[in-house]
Length: 213
Image (cartoon, rainbow, N blue to C red):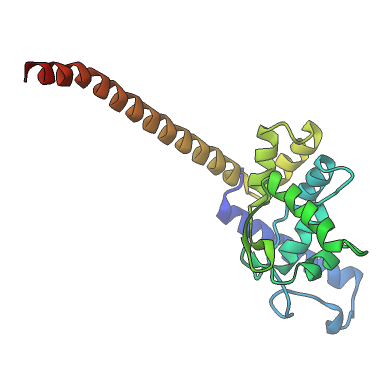
């Protein structure tokens, strides 16, 4: 399993190979035809597993597919997974919705994304989805698996891709976080039970003291 450093080296080698193949198969292509995030304006960083995540979303929200809605959110993110949505109509249009109820349709998709754990939201001046945090899709897909909301074949393909890009540590980190939360909750519950037991044990003593007075 590749770690972060190995994955970076692998990506660089893949980029170099792609450049060599490009020069071989498409020689003389004008520079204006190229798009590269280091030289062109208007870019953001997208998770490589996003296409599989979108498929998982669409499979789970049949009749109201929300995968493209998630993509439009990532495409608007300022290279950081947080958005302030001041004009829902714009996001609804970019998600492909048309008609007189575009915002209502978009909001239904947003609710589906939130239910599937791909976004977290807070209300603001523009409504229920004014502030949006884009959850790591790798974590969200794993959450879907834990809750029986993704087909085994698609999940297997997801894991293959995660391991290929060296991101399996994110899945492990998610489970470690859940285990830590479980332990903290168990400790809090044990402390609560112990405190309740101590109160019960002290009650007769207090009652006896009152009687003696």
